[in-house]
Amino acid sequence: MKDLHTNIPLVTRTQGTGNDLVFLHGWGMNSGAFTSFIPYLSAHFRITTIDLPGFGENAEHSPQPYTIAQLAEMIAPYIPAKSILVGWSLGGLVAQKLAAKKSHLLAGLVTIASTPRFVAGPRWPGIAADVLTTFKRQLEKNFSKTLERFLAIQAMGSETAKQDIKAIREQITQYPSPSEFALKEGLHILSSEDLRSEIGAITLPTLRLYGRLDSLVPTSGIDGICELQPQADTVVLPHASHAPFISHPQQTADILFSFAANIYQQKAS
Image 1 (cartoon, rainbow, N blue to C red):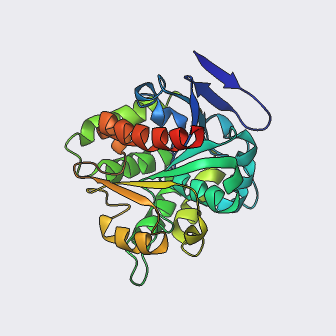
Image 2 (image 1 turned 90 degrees about the horizontal axis):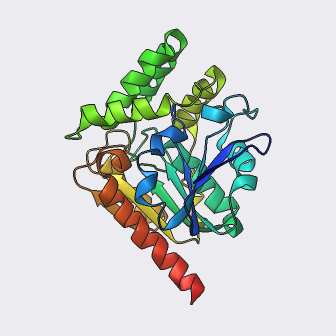
């Protein structure tokens, strides 16, 4: 049973029963990206998906300025009390911001293929700045082609790359297209946002899940993230790229289930 909540201004979707998991998607996407993954967990948890402001069913609701802090503020009221927040890619930045600034709302944090800083810098592996600049230029000409290129990069290295791209494309096209403003500003966030000074203050149980073949969040940067937040658990899926919940759904679900079940068992005892 899936419930649609249309509390203005944001739309959220909830299905399943049990303790709460909340999912936030990545740039250029929407909650449709999780469609095939949710059934792996919905028998054990109540799962809420929230389209980031400016994307999917919330395409018409964008904060100004479009910043991680503003996105977190908009989303916070729609998170069920004491949820485990799961953020993928750009959604992981929002999730980290919420965990750092509004930890009282949450029971735990999971980031999937995410980082406190996406763009590469001195002694910090990440996306080359010129790659993001190229995406910005392409975006002004043709969103569809830009998204296709972005999907290709996300799946790069995965043995099931073609199937992964097809699956994500089919799932996200069931939702409304994102606003041009959110797409542009979302890329700006990826090229400029830096939460490295904040994640050490996250006291919530944290799981950071990576794909070894991910070219957007390279595993060479994991040690640096561990130094900033040493209390976080880290898991690297050896054959996954940027969307492990698409390429390796059962493995990803098992890892999430173990992490979440442990948190909720401890709270119940």
